[in-house]
Image (cartoon, rainbow, N blue to C red; front, side, top):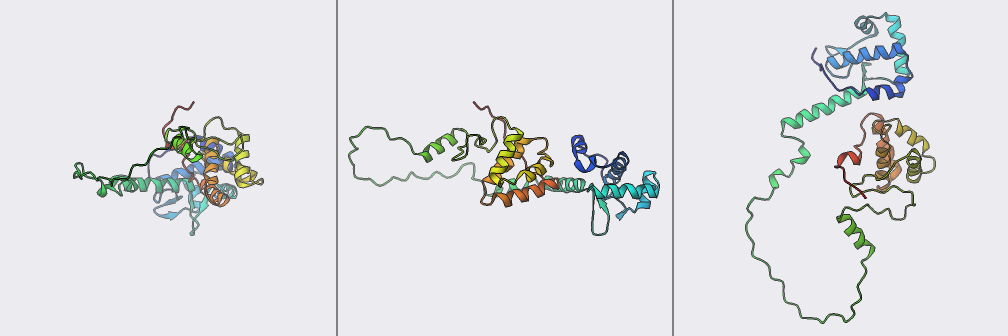
Length: 273
């Protein structure tokens, strides 16, 4: 027995999981005991002991229940999609297996000096005292008289966009409708986000029949608790060449507890007028 003696537990996720809400009190209690077994043995996340998946009789013996009772409760949990099985039929928790993989990757990166994506160019850094290069003199050009007109030239739309982006102004929304969410230079959504706005953006990006997909997204972590994150995900899909395909892939990842990080959690908060 090795596994782990401590791990994070998201109480709100447990209470908001629709699959668990469909199960009885007894089934949810059995699943909690099975999670304890899965967390305390290797491989983490699998209901097994010494590498061997537990059978119904084993689970009944370890949880103090009868075999017939455990068989009925396991059937209830499986029918509602609470757990999964591998090719050998061993029961495992999708969330716990995913968290264990992320933890192992973080430990590996920590031993090698941190995130490898941040240290790729460590050997190509510029020296502290680079050699001084002589200035290059541009060739002389013949003098041309300036135009006599003194009327100011208005900047083009592209120039205005570049200037506003450099100053940290809101990102332009182009030909979008007036209710279209505004974003800052980091892609974070500004202003209030309502349920109505979420469905409006979803239908505009994915089509009029996107209501079902939006409802699924609202049940996934972290979007069921943060509609702003859901709107940001839709806007990121709209920025791609194929929004529907991109969103479908993102929704599948969210359904297996691998959500995209919301843009307003990536960058520090700013004060907007």
